[in-house]
Image (cartoon, rainbow, N blue to C red; front, side, top):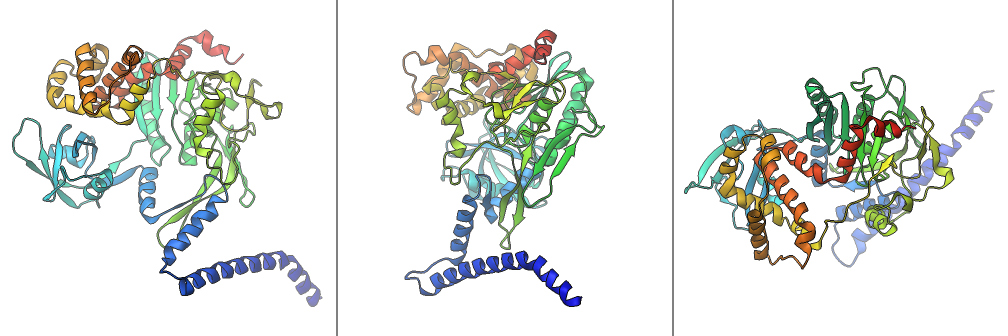
Length: 527
């Protein structure tokens, strides 16, 4: 009897033994090649670099979202996802080879010692950094550091002849995933999220509570160009809009158990009108939220088809403090739709899908998007038709508006000419403008970009040999004026002021506002 049991156990374990042997053979094979190269190759080799290259190549054979993160890059990645870093707390821009403070972060170390927007950092701990080919990477190394450490900044301020010195004690600096939150009308609020980091849900909750105190009963949630992040943050956010026990998302993988994520009874906006803005830059966690809201007929999705990233990654740390992000499962919306769009191994154009969508005409017309019958699904409440096969197709499609685009405007933007001009202009006019427009709302409502200001900008651009072609200004002038005004608002006031101006030029935003303020148009979507 004992012999039979042992034989049965061996048979049961045989697949695992064979699998283990195969793994060991592969490891021995890899080690053998690596050792041979190191021992006999004609030139000196870097064993660590060879290993890293092999890891990178292996991951490229899997899918577009499994990848290697070096030790140096991992610090930045973790900072972004954790929602904070340690440093002096400023937003800066390198203008004319000099670090220029765009704005000190509110409540941060630099603001506390009196550093203001427009200040130039010319020295750090006695080292001259102005006019020596400084770049963003070096600025980060000089200004960031452990909480509690000190750094002396030599500051040149417009209107003051001598350099002033400030001793700044580094601290933990929040990285906000909420760009803006403000009231559009007496009962409609607007919130824009740029990613789903560890702090996203709290940021959303705090902003939404403030909007509700002001009277918000309805919400436009802007997830355009939001590339995603933590899945649990997406689940928490979707939970705000759905009733208890409704499925938010589920994941399935070959070697991990299926996970179901359902709503609880803690939602803060279970009633009222809801619109979610999306576009081709909305991915991953953004698609989880939009998909859940659409599948349960809870709100209206407005914009363009989302990116189509529905793969679940898990981060595994490696012995040398590097890491890999490995795909372990796929997301499904509550109806069962697969969010992930099709990809091939070594698909070099996977992340260039934007240009392919332009070529197909998808960004300009919903009719150019072909969905086979096999990808049709029915929403769970009203049985409306929705589509799978990659990304979330909005309920209301909004095409890209190219009527005001010119190569001149694109070059001004790509080469940061408008941004640099605004910083230079505010060196002279900052105090004057803030005396006239004491708040961001006053500036938004009353400030007008004059022809004189446009001419100053054109002269500034000309110094960089950037000039408009015939017809460029007639076509792009209004867009450039809005762009300039929005940049001025952000540098003088805050992100809310920027988006109140910038959004008026966004056709997705304008469409969302029209629908949410019109009961008939809103309800028509659900028929």
